[in-house]
Length: 345
Image 1 (cartoon, rainbow, N blue to C red):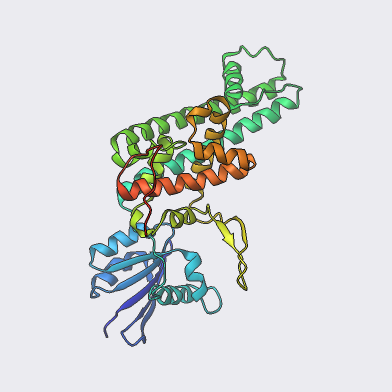
Image 2 (spheres, rainbow, N blue to C red; image 1 turned 45 degrees about the vertical axis):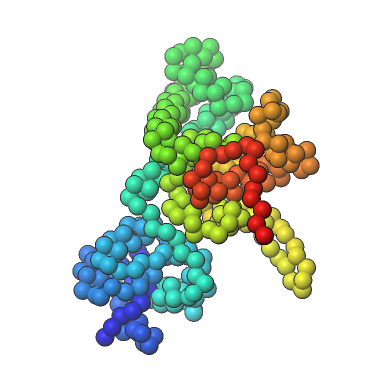
């Protein structure tokens, strides 16, 4: 029995294995407990292993690569097409085994421990920002019940909550309502301080990481965005062009073409939502800067704002920024405002 290809369906405790030989005959179809996974693959000769890119997939890919196996991660959306019928672990493992052998399949590079550690800063930061927003919105609604309106802006809200902790709010609230306001204020200010701590770590990381430092030269890309792209993009060479990189981020239009007629719709919004959001937020900052200091915004962006509505122009600018980032990652350069693309025959 010579196993050549394995489809491994990951889970928390029970893993499903589907293995075939050179002729495509199924030789192993079994479930493994978590503690049985490494011993099982240790006994096998090096082979091709397919895994869906999901939680813990990068960890298991690294562990299996240490045993000499060729491990390839695939987006779950691309594997789904190979599931024949009902949703079971065995059917998923069989579909993974089939998908990993397709010559046109797209794979996800395996991330290192260091890259995942850096990305954890961004994931935690994003979560705490959502929690801070929820707490502030709750405080706004809480005070609105007593006719008190907090001015717009995160800083105004945090300033008022800080004054409430110091007892300088000067507002007449019933004792239970005041006590709950203090609870919200403490939680919101704690979340704000935690966000600042993570931001400081990202700034230090951006200064020490050469790739992230170069990406900060792109207009609209700050230390947070630069550090995120440096950690998330394992191999920029897997993309043949900047457009493919932008499509990977979900910033290119969806195609609905038939009969020789090309129709483009809204952007696909596929790929990493967090990275896409960072680019759109950076482009929005450029739009605001354009209103104050037009000379600091690249001419191509300024021309785009004159032709398109603001939100359409913002997403188009994010698309352009993604292509610039791909070029810098691929060539190892820094951003040059007056760069003229080379014309190929």
